[in-house]
Length: 502
Ligand code: UD1
Ligand code: MG
Image (cartoon, rainbow, N blue to C red; front, side, top):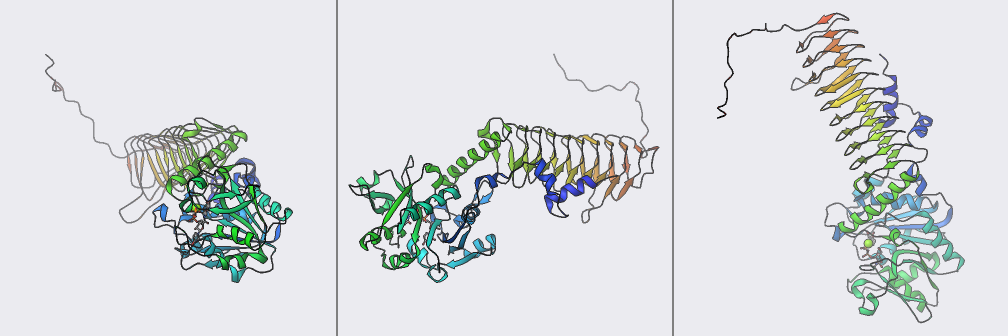
């Protein structure tokens, strides 16, 4: 029995063995979708500050806002990946509310410093907490932890423009269809930015302004902290607003610039769960369009969920209602769905996963058929050309090349060799209420319908088991094994009761 294929490839998914990356890159998809979205740049004299201390009151959640997930990934991961791709000198992340949870999630990358904001007194106050950790840089780029659609290129444009225009304070602005909730960009008659007014502080005329602040700034390091020390908190929210550095800079004779971004969606900030769903929709559309451009057919794209870290091969068809989640990888020329769920699944080329199948942490070999209505649970590994049919559940089991389990079966804690046929309704009885035991089936075995294999038990190569058998002892190779059957009787003259149909 050769389980090499399964063990080896499955290890790639679950990280148990050495890697085989050239193979993975070839089959899954040449480039990870996230790689495409972020390009590496180089800003060695730039400090980044990520503001992530807010409670996210409007989320109404015990989970800190930046740990809420967008397409399967916490929001903070997106922004950290985006700013890391600038290769800045250092990144300071300001946390406060539930900071331990945020830190535990992010870990400790080398160029990242954690800054605590004990009380969330506003965005200006949050940046001020970074004073101790920032030194010897030209500019400070301030971003919010709640804008997961932001792209590295956009931040690079902001920094480049800021430097080209020799600005002291530069704010990234946008013109979204609905400016509600954002700080408005107030300009004078000459079009120069004079202030940023928050929704809650704005009068009617200011609320009518369509240009808003993205909350993202590039500020010359030399002027930043002097400005931050000067801001007050006399406003509708009693907070120290970062946007207040704009009028303060102008008063001090410094220059303020605004860079307008083309795509207002990119700066969408998540403040509540309505925003979360909206941002997820925008990102989902981007991801689906990217896979379509890479040769994947996606039917009824509005009904499909494909998370950010999924990979899909060329000429694969994803049918309506499918969920491809987590680290799922699907090879070339597969057909998935409709309505199949794949979570951390590894699927090789030319596989058919039929309707309503559920695959979780399992691997499927090339040319296999799965479902409809099949369930592959963690550590199920199907070799090439395996057929798993309707209402079959497979858990922690290896099924060898060409073997078939086509109807209504449970295969758990088992190994099945190649070219076996497992009849309808076969059950591996793997559990005695306290312990799990293994069923080991050789190659070319035929198991009759409605067989119970009471583990631990082995079935030798070439064996045939008669239908309806309860197998409690090892089965030798070849020949026929069957458990004692009750003799069949015939009752002459017996009449089935009939309904009165008059
Ligand atoms: C903020 C801006 C607004 C801008 C919008 C863009 C201010 C006062 N307002 O509003 O001009 O249009 O972003 O999305 O800056 N945070 C802290 N500590 C605090 C308060 C907030 O770290 O004391 C962090 C939050 O975790 C969040 C970010 O700062 O990541 C922005 O705070 P949020 O409350 O979302 O501000 P908005 O109302 O969105
Ligand atoms: Mg916000």
